[in-house]
Image (cartoon, rainbow, N blue to C red; front, side, top):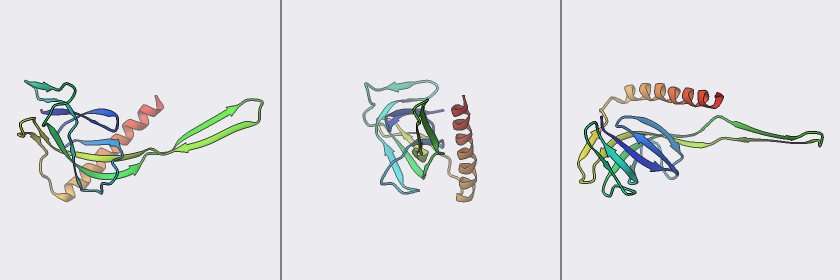
Length: 143
C-alpha cells in the first residue's frame, strides 16, 4: 500500500490513495476542484521509501476538495472568583475535507491511484467517512 507524508496548514499528514482527510481550510477553492500538494516530505510503499531533506523534489499528491465547513463550537469560559468577572467566548474552526486521488513519485510516475466509483456511491461512502472522522474528534475531545 503506497503512502505519502504531506505538509499543509502547518501540519503533517500520512495519506493513502482514496482516503478522506480533514485539514485546515484551503481558501479560494470550491468543491470538486483539484488540488496539488507539492510539499511532500516522504513517500513509499511496503518495500521501499523515499525521504526528502526536507522535501522530495518533483513528488506531488493530487486531491479533490469534497467540502469546506466549520467544526462544532468550542466554548471558552473564564471566571475570576470573587471579582464578579467572567468571560464567555465561542470558536468554530474552519476545515476542508479532501479526498486523495493520486500519489506521484519524484520522476512523475503514479505510485497509487484512487479507484473510480460512481457518484452515487461516492456520496454514500463520503457521508460514512465524515461521520467516522467526527466521532473520532468528539472522542478525542472528551479524553
